[in-house]
Image (cartoon, rainbow, N blue to C red; front, side):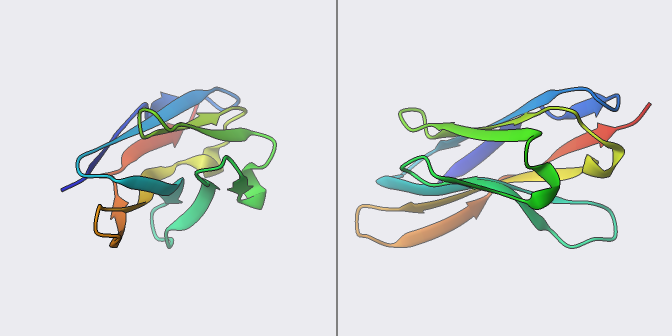
Length: 120
């Protein structure tokens, strides 16, 4: 089984910064896309940013220019640098990973979520 372990959430004031990390471990033959999603109370889960194995990225319009996604392929780890945080960024942030095992089966796993709260 593959586990995704997130870290880095917390409480920050508006305009502040946080860096989220998500490390994948287990039977991964080939890691594909990794990304971050978030879910605010009473809302559906939404994409924040994703990064392909080759490094191409895609961001939600609401975070463009403020958030940066990156990854360390050797460590199967994805990061989300969040700058200029706003109260509307408050949500539970979930890590996502798409990977293949040795037999070529595709899997899509989620982390347990980490709370990000932006408030003064």
